[in-house]
Image 1 (spheres, rainbow, N blue to C red):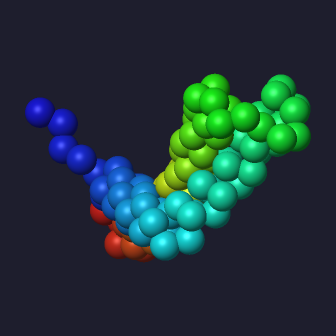
Image 2 (cartoon, helix red, strand yellow):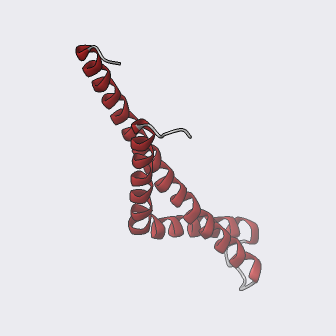
Image 3 (cartoon, helix red, strand yellow):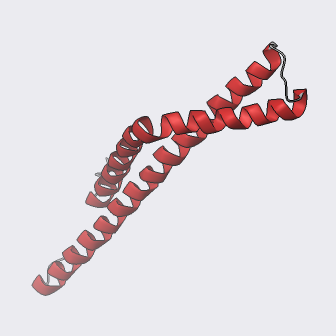
Length: 112
């Protein structure tokens, strides 16, 4: 059975903390703007396809709804993935610093 090293622990902890922070940030600051931007893009696509005075049909509404969903998904991906990678990076750097400090201590004491 393989034991986990502290480096795996700190890296995973950083990843989980970063992802959690990204989910919270997305809920607070990314959900509504993602929906608005996606909706505007959907309106522009519908306007190009069906003309300026759009009829009250189902196709333009579906285009706007799909683009709103895509806007929210892109916003969620950016927030969660970005902060997750940032947290992982911080955990990795902390791991490197901890392993360097541990190797210095073992060199000074002469133990492996």
